[in-house]
Image 1: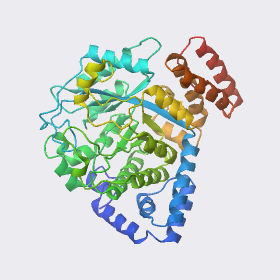
Image 2 (image 1 turned 120 degrees about the horizontal axis):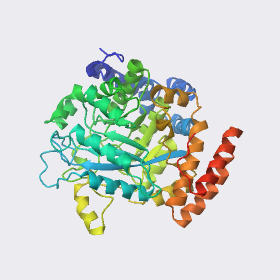
Image 3 (image 1 turned 60 degrees about the vertical axis):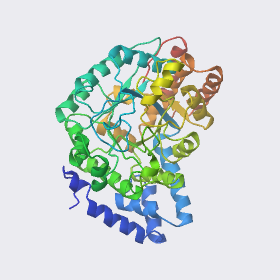
Image 4 (image 1 turned 135 degrees about the horizontal axis):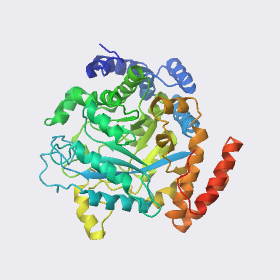
Length: 475
């Protein structure tokens, strides 16, 4: 029976409730009165439950769908303004003992080269990322007790935070590793991780077990209950996500929102982020082999409905998607994206010839090949402020403290200012002349939008100090 407060995966991700929700949504896909009422509730910016959001996702009324997309844009702007946070993935190792059939890292794939970075190699990767301008990373590694034990991840975090190359520094390292124990999560917290990210891939249990036939990840409950253990271990920010395209997307959408509701009910704080990856081509992986493919139109609507349902959460889209779709996703709800990404092990600190070899270890094909500088300039041309801010994490504004600031719209008092200051750092240290020129004009115009005069004067002072060579101001 469905129970969002339960600690059991089968109860907070209840298949019977999901199927009942999908039937209800389908029955009401042209119920204008009901849909208009749900849109009115969404306009209050306090979110929707999984059943209400599923009705909107199923909506087949053109007028209401236009209103839905427009409302998603309004809510995104209200909570996150025109700031877009940038990050890059850092792949440490592709050794893995799981048999996940959608992933080229799976243990049965004998064609992909296996590689694990040493600590000196990690330091070189971090220096290369810093030379691009990155301040925020997402660590990725396969699950393997011999090659990738927890101690390796902890040592790697220490290395990452220790590298201070020129004016560069990694200020926040999020971690995407396999489900583990409460004690291990406690150690990750003590090592200074930002968000713990774990994709469910699919919430449909039968499909999950078919796609994960061997390895520790084959245990559906262990994997699905990982966020509970992370929070019990003191990790205050967690990130959810499914791999759209594996199973019927409406099922996954409903279950994803139920997981968010469970975290709110059980711990008083929902997911810090929700990621929306889609299955892509990779070594031995063809998206056409799976039955859950969704069109760009459906994908865009999923993003908009997630924004209406959980307006407070950060939403992430990666370089799995191309520039055109990413631009649309940004307008509808996405607030974070990767730039200049490599999904191979050791893909950043290499020359051209070595880069080709490193590409053989890619987890998936990248659709957006632009450099970070090009992505930053593109964002500004679209009217966004590229942000490298990590202030909330470093100021202790995490978990329920961060969510309270977001839900009351007070976070803008911090984030807008920090975005401008970190953008100035990027422009001075890493940007091309064209990007710098555009960025300086943007900062000058955006200073006037800082609502508090005292904050505005402080930012202006810090911008002068940054131009004089000082770094790392935050409010």
